[in-house]
Image (cartoon, rainbow, N blue to C red):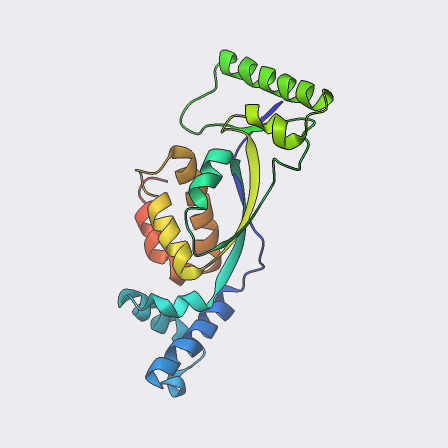
Length: 204
């Protein structure tokens, strides 16, 4: 049994400038203003379309991300339907050592840890008895680690993060969403500037 922290990984190699230039080229088609494209015109153009709420343009670019989190948080994530998901399957994966995700807003007590040790022992005993992983998983708690990869366009990523980085979100969901926002802001700053200022400059 192992307790681990949540983590985020960008699956794509992101060239933020190329993404912004591509989006400018697409967006300027709407206004037939392609002749105004310069080496750095994408900065002002993308900033302006976001201010005007013309976010359909940024649906033309998508990012693939991997989260290591717990099952309950993954269930919240997949409520965002304009996306594609691939998730570690408890039906088919047979665990030798089970990993559990640490909560970010409190510490597991010794009693909690012994409970998780007992869960792991019971899971292994069910497998030893001949039960399939899809049967033995019935005793696993929500804090069981899962890995999930998702692909979202930039507009849906902004929408998801605007909800899940908020203080009203579940603490673990907020934690991993803010980790994600920081990574994305580092790679594509203009697209996520306003969200970064809203959620990461004040209380992160």
